[in-house]
Image (cartoon, rainbow, N blue to C red; front, side, top):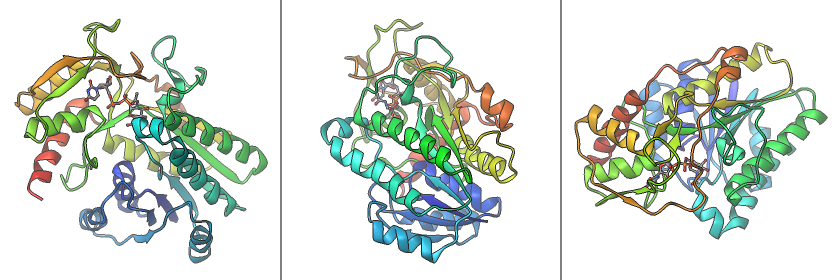
Length: 336
Ligand code: UD1
């Protein structure tokens, strides 16, 4: 089966492509290199021994997207391609609306028959949930950022598209916090410039690229005062896409629009994560407590029983595994 992976050279996209190739799928990667590097393609080929196709296309380009659909005959699409910086989206909202929504619309305009589609969403759609763990029945709250709003809008577009097109089968995955790197040590997260997310900042501090990690606030109403998140290993996250694709192909879905939380089900505070990183990797992190970051939710961790019950998917890796792999990846990056 031929699967289009948009954003296939990115962090989640590259790991998912590896998993798909190893499961025997034929993969066409589309990427515009806006937040990825071309050498990831070589790494993916080296890890798998397989040769996916690669098309360097900006999905906002309608003409090129039409040609893509004429050149290939996709059975499924996993749509990752999107801008993802919360901060940047606040300063350049138009960039986010045009790209994240425009890309999805251009893809959908070319789909008129049976298609398996997996959409990359985020737990950010829940905002600060009233209680934990977060189940899929929780309300979608007003978004804190244009980035979050694009995810909410895309979810809505897909829901409507499914209602109008019974042969279109979609699964929307609401990721919690992906961390870690591939076991080969060859692919991982590649933040361009100063990282916004915790783990890349932490590994860059550990290796000496950054002087000090700032913990954004320790006066929250949590066990140690720092924010709590659900950190999921990137290899688990890659695996869930393949499991969901197989679930759709085997026609196990009850509706043609389904959506799931993807996390571990366990919450970890920022300080707990730092301590765990130090312990499993035997390194010291230079950190200090700083101001709260605007827009941070206090606690977010998933109830993952729906995806286990319906799709039969659950995590295989621990946070310890993820933190070890992040450190190996950072050390490998230093040697590049
Ligand atoms: C962030 C986005 C979320 C998005 C996700 C994509 C915000 C508010 N949320 O999630 O919408 O889907 O990235 O990857 O930006 N932290 C520090 N110091 C740092 C960096 C982070 O203390 O230098 C803390 C944060 O306050 C947070 C935790 O670490 O409590 C995780 O932060 P991060 O990795 O940025 O992820 P989220 O904020 O959960």
